[in-house]
Image 1 (cartoon, rainbow, N blue to C red):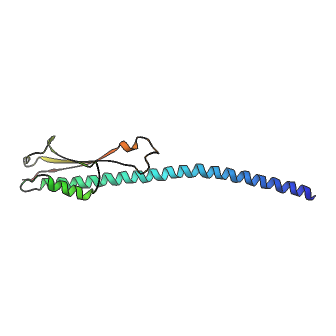
Image 2 (cartoon, helix red, strand yellow; image 1 turned 180 degrees about the horizontal axis):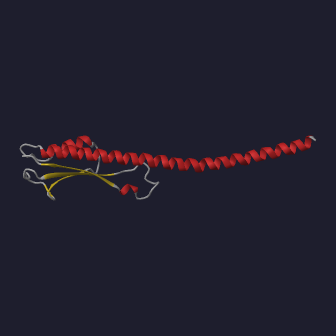
Image 3 (cartoon, rainbow, N blue to C red; image 1 turned 60 degrees about the horizontal axis):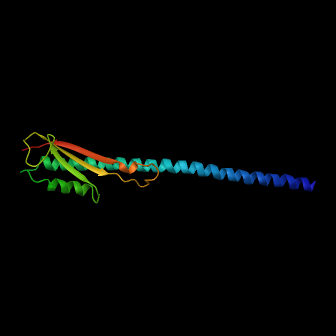
Length: 146
């Protein structure tokens, strides 16, 4: 009788060990999927935050350019934009009016369009190939007031 109990107990322990192995595999699969979803949410949030920051910076730059009396070089507006988006390599700022780059004061009432672009760098670039080739753009337009 004791030998039968021994066989029954050893079968139970074998079953538990195999169940533990299956649980480890399930944990590894579900944890990797969960981490992929979490990092995706984080990257999406960073991209939306960057887009909002660039839109705000373009709006501030357009406001400075539209209200400048007399019409100043765009250095003041550019410095205001760079203050809102500090230390970003690849930041590009373009001022246009009626489709042409601004070199002289536009006529009163013409819109001044400010475009701010920035290449988006992901934290985890190897998850989705080609994700680092994204450029985020913020735009704002205001009418020049004389």
